[in-house]
Amino acid sequence: MVKQVSGGSRLLQFGHFTLSEWLVLAQHELLLFAGIFFLLGAVDELATDLIWLWLRMTGRARDLILAAETSDSAPLSGQAAVFIPAWREDRIIGITVRHLLASWPQEAMRLYVGCYANDPETLLAVSHAAKGDARVRIVVHDSHGPTTKADCLNRLHRALLVDEARQGFAARMVVLHDAEDMVDPASLALLDGALRGVEMIQLPVLPLPQPQSRWIGSHYCEEFAEAHGKALVVRSALGANIPLAGVGCALSRDTIARLANLRDDGPFATDCLTEDYELGVGIGAVGGRSRFLRARTQEGRLVATRAYFPARIDQAVRQKTRWVHGIAFQSWDRLGWGGHPSDVWMRLRDRRGPLTALVLAVAYALLILFGISWLLRLGGMGEPLIVSPLMKIILVANFVSLLWRGAMRFAFTAREYGSGEGMRAILRVPVTNIIAILAGRRALGAYVRTLRGHQLRWDKTEHHAHPAEFPDAILAA
Image (cartoon, rainbow, N blue to C red; front, side, top):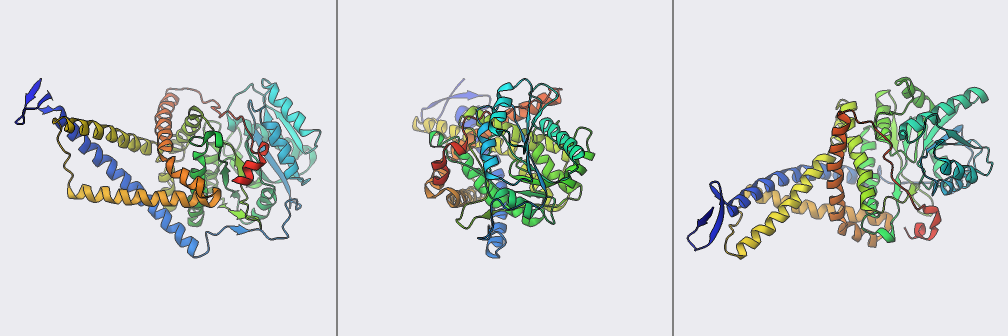
């Protein structure tokens, strides 16, 4: 149907409204929805920023500087069992094992690598890398892979139990790492010394920039720079449970035993995609205390786990789908909302991924609608969007928040990677948002499938490069 208006323009009419009127209505409702939820997110982030700034000014957020006499090869106060689960990691697992053995020469360290009989390439790579080092224990899973990462970790836990019983020792701590990690030489001794008075220690993760993937692979830099430079610092200071990153973390042996007693198959939740997150949160449920620890060497190097993250958009979306599915959907079902008020707040932050994806999708839809409306007005067929005074206040507040968020993202990224990477972090915001939208949509679909009885499998990320292969890139970062 066509409607004649006073100016002579002819507009398509749908029901009681013209196309232009429908566009204005859609813009108004979507703008209201996105504006309110962006503002709520801004308040949440601002609260975290202000707490971090207060901690910084009072000296509680400063990185620990290791003493000059501290040695990377300092003897450990007890046995350390390092768990690395591996499935089809023959490309990089050998590099990881060789670097780890060279970085951690302590005799009290034992490396347990979980492999599968139907993955002979990974088995062979680990065997060659070990070169007969008695500290390496290759554990072959009872089932063919892939099962789940948690299931492989539980197999390593059973191997540790057998070794303790046969050889008459008791491990003091269990350290978790992934097949693609480059460990820091100082981290094992640091974890050993810090695991006094607490049951779990988490060290930072430091993704490395990737010149061949500036927009996708490198976008993890700013995410972890803020998460492990600010958010977890605040979380630790508030006494909230610290979610494990699954790498660069240590748990006391007693805590592992207590968690194992809660399940029939072991301490790691095999029916959860983010068993590391659940393990960290679950420590508080058994009375454990956790701590996030940032430390630097005398030369200024951050003691952290370094790694290359996915460089392709499909791999990045797959990885973040697993995170959103496990943390936002599964943990809601499995862990609930109870606990200290700070824990409730942090769980709200952890589980906002799907809502964030929805709000971002609405924001990009708004941009498209604004463009269509602008083109219609150029043709004399559009109507302007009338914004109320309250909506103007919300928009101004969100714009100021956007500038503040950009400044914070630049500052935390530049602190670890330099000002060049800090500027790229701001330019990568649209890429980060698109990946978040795709991952949120995919995670919702995956969660619905599990509700219908779909079996969880190790939807792992493929790894093709290891930081130890590119020492110049590490120094540049």
